[in-house]
Amino acid sequence: MQIIDGKATAAAIKQEIADSVKQLIAEGHRRPCLAAILVGHDGGSETYVHNKVMACEACGFDSRLIRFEDTVSQAELLACIDSLNADDGVDGFIVQLPLPAHIDKTRVIEAIRPEKDVDGFHPVNVGRLAIGLPGFISATPLGILTLLRRYGIDTKGKECVILGRSNIVGKPLSQLMMQKGYGDTTVTVCHSHSSDIAATCRRADILIAAIGRPGFVTADMVKPGAVVIDVGTTRVPDAGRKSGFRLSGDVCFDEVAPLCSYITPVPGGVGPMTICMLMLNTLAAARHEYYD
Ligand code: GUN
Image (cartoon, rainbow, N blue to C red; front, side, top):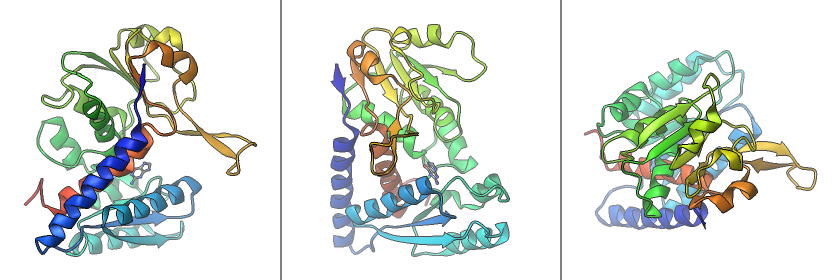
């Protein structure tokens, strides 16, 4: 069994991005620039956005953080998006989710120009992935595929089972894992209405858990030799930690790990790759790789 080290892989990729930025600057380009819109003061969102800004620094990008109180109107938010869409100094931007209930998330995502949608959430980018056209692919699915590639894990023709059908992870991941030249796997997606999830999981050569239920995947659900990817990052109370919580994955790591050929830990597996892929998408935006 080999542990897939997302932290080390992400650090190596960030270094590669920083080297590419040096090259861009030497060619006379300005630094890539990522902007982030953060609404309110949710603890998780604050941490994610802070880490994104830090990653920009590590990669040699410029970054802008635009903050609104959670009383911001939808019109104000859309006006901010319009100004970032038109700003030639910004290559890509994100609106950190979740948003307050009075704001229509879909309207917000649809307002972002697909050329600057480095989260890959806009329907145009989601659709381009579905039909195999180049475009921005959302960071968590791209991070998972990148980990599989970097560890030399052959996915072609394998059975892939994905737990979860969220718009951010499960759905785009299912597209990516079946896409020609990407995953090339046979994909099954399980969700809250699926029957006999354990039996489906036992068929998987590659099992990817993204349901946000700590410890859901147990040893009896895993085929010996499977590759297990844990996307879960649920905060569970832990009085022994300074923060008062720890991150828990969707997989019972201790009982599942001995069965696997490869497994991602939580933390230190998929998580660090997500921000790193956002940086890669921003670099691609700065280079106009997908859209002229
Ligand atoms: N909230 C949780 N994950 C993400 C992400 O990848 N992008 C954005 N914008 N918000 C998130």
